[in-house]
Structure formats: C-alpha cells, structure tokens
Length: 237
Length: 292
Image (cartoon, rainbow over all chains, first blue to last red; front, side, top):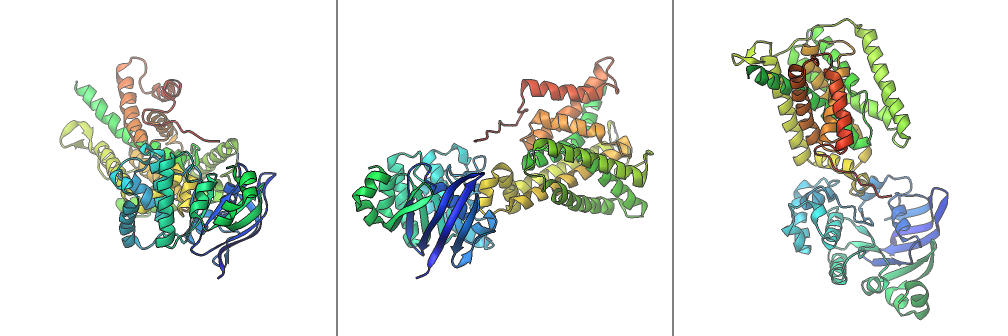
C-alpha cells in the first residue's frame, strides 16, 4: 500500500530559526497516526508545514501529489482538514455558521445540510446550541465544534493539533472516542499531535516520537507504549 | 418645532451619505486594517463617470448601474495592483499608498473634467416630498436608496455563502484559509464592494454639493467621524454613526449660535477626537485582541 501522506527531508524555518531538521515519515490510508514529543519539539510546526503555513523545504506528497508551492486554501481543498492549536473558532458567528464555513469550498450544496445533521448526531451538544455564538461555548464544546467544522470538508485526511489542550479529562475521553469512530466509520485518516501521549497511544495505530525537529523513534502505537526507555525519556510517564 | 423636524430629516438625508462612506471605510478597514483615505476620491471619480455617461446620453438609472459595475471592477483592480503588494508592508508605507492614490485620482479627475463646478441631475427632483415642506423628494430618495442598499448588504452578508466567506476572511484570516477560503480574493471583493458603495454615495450627494474634484473631501471627513463614532470594527455601528453625525451636524449648525455652515466641519473633527478619547472602540465596536 502506498502512503497517503509521504514526507521527506522536511525542514521548516521561523525567520532565521530552523524548527524542523529533515523530518521523514509517512501515513497510510485509513490509519490514525500520532506525533509525540515534548514542548517545542516541532509537532505543531510539522502540521503547519503540511498546510504551508510556515516556510519550509523538502517534499510533502499527498496521495502521490506534491503539495510544495500550493497555498493553504488549495491544500485544504485537496481534502486535508486542519484543526489548529487554539481551535480557530469563528467566535462571533453561530455554531451553524461555523459548520457552514467548514463546507464552504464544497460544490455539492445539497449534501451540506445533511452533513450538518450528521455532525449533530456525532456531537448532540452542538445541535442544542446551533443558534448560539460559538464564542459562548465551553472549551470542550468549541473543540467538538472545531472537529465538526473540519469534518464538514469531507476530508480524507484530518490534522489535529493538541485536541486535548485545556479540556477536562472526561471531555478528552469522549472526544477521542468520537475521533476513533470517525476514523473507522467515515474512513478519515487522522494525524494527531498530542502532549497527552498515553491517551494518544491508546487510540492510534502508529506513533512517531519527535525531538528537536527530528523523528527519533517510530513504531506501532503498542510498541512505543511498551518501550520503557522511550516512555521515560520522551513521554514522561 | 417645524424647524427642528426639518433639520432632523435633512440630517438623516445627509447622514445616509455619511453612512455609506463610513460603511465603505469599515469594509476595507475590516479586511486590511487600514483606513482608506482615498475612499472619497474614488467615490468622486465614480460620480464623474456617471456624469460622463449621462453626457453621452445614457439614461440616469442605466448610468447609475453601469457606474456601480465600473466602480466595483476598479476597486478590485486598485487592490490587486496597489494594495495586494503592500499587504505585508509597514503601516506608513500603506498610508503613503493611500495618499498617493488620493492625489492621483484627484489630479486625474481635474485633468479630464477640469475643476469647474458641474450640475448633477437628481432622478427624484427637488419638489416637496408628499406635499410636505419638511423634506424634498431628493432627500427622501437619498434615504430610500441608502436603506435599500443596507438591507441588500445585510442579506448578502447574512444569508449567502460568499457573504459568509467574506465575514470569515475578515474576522480570522488564518482559520478562513484552513476551511479553503481564498482570503486574498475576499479582500479584493471587499474593495470592489466598498468602491461601489462609495459610488452610490457620490451619485446621491452630487446634486446637493455639486460635482467637482474636491466634492468628497468634507463628506469623507464626516464618513470617518461616523465610522469612528460607530466603531471601526462594526458595519452596523458605522451606519448608525453616519445617521447620528448627519443629524448632530445639522442641529449644531442650526441651534448653536456662531457655528453656522462654516464651523460644521471642525465639529466632525472634534467628534472624532472626543470619541477616541472617551470610548476608542466607538458605540458598537469591540476591542480587537491580538495574540502574539
């Protein structure tokens, strides 16, 4: 099976500072892959580089097509949804408008309203609040809205940046359960960046460990989880 | 009492024009975080285009619509050629760009049509509106056209997908790109619409102030006052600010001795200063929080 996302020699820069030093990894179709690592290891930068939101060199191929030189919006339109750190919620708009925005690049306008209903099935709390301004939602609700908004694109690949950030443990469990369901039922491949390594390893198939902008370890999630040395030095539990 | 009602209605009529200018200013400000000092000159040039079309025998309303279309395209062209390349430039560079645009449009208009005052027709006439001496048909027409425009804009931004995309691009450009919106073209579209709205303001006010290259200078200052009063981040606030400034200006000019017509304009400037000191976000604006 060829890789859905194939990244080679990825280097990224913030001004003069180099944040990624030749990252190489791939993600196979239908999988749920997690990138683990400490603060500042380059997890967020990797996701931002995929969507061309940070200056980078190297090759990134999505379904065999190179993404180099494409604008963020055109990369998204290929079917890559990105839930950024901090969620990127349009706080002054209603929940429903946020969902509409997720599907703004789609041409099949008829299917959009049925997709919105599907999101309300996944996340019933959003249905209760669909006319509310998104800024009035709690953190957990906003994270669910961010995931739902990303799914409205009908993506084939979803990039999630720290979905558990700032959420209560119970809410995080719920969220990850739903992510697993989306991965299996809707056939959305997922690349998730997490600091909560334990949880991420529970639901992911494959894991990469990053340190200062390089991959230092890779394997199936269970291999990484059971490797004592990796756990102690990189995952901190 | 009659004088008071008369002045309030006249204020609402000119306020409608200030509201249009303020709305145009706010639309561009929301998109690129800069004040378009050339908004008035763009509107003036559009008005000259309408006048020229009518000189060539085009009927009023056709000239009106054609001018809106030309202004819309011209707004997009100006953004693509001048301000897209300046998008990441420092603020002073942008200010210089706007002043250059102001000077260029003003001089070119003077070159083509010279600086003599021209009559501009009104499709509404200037007879008393509904037999009442309080307001003329042209003033009623100004109010009517502006309200129709505002309702159309409201529906556009509230209920169309492209309106939704434009709002998203203006509030959170990065998130907008992440749902696949081409934010750069949304900015261009905003310029086109602001330019067309300015054209409406120019065409409506031209029968009152007469057509000449400097006709919009005062109007633009009132537009700025209205935008600042209502809040530069709120289109609705800008519109309300426009009507308030129009009424305020007329009442002060009528009732405070010594103000008259000559001192009306400094009042607009004083209003800007007072609002900026007392409530910098304006009546309906909100503080823009930027995370760094």
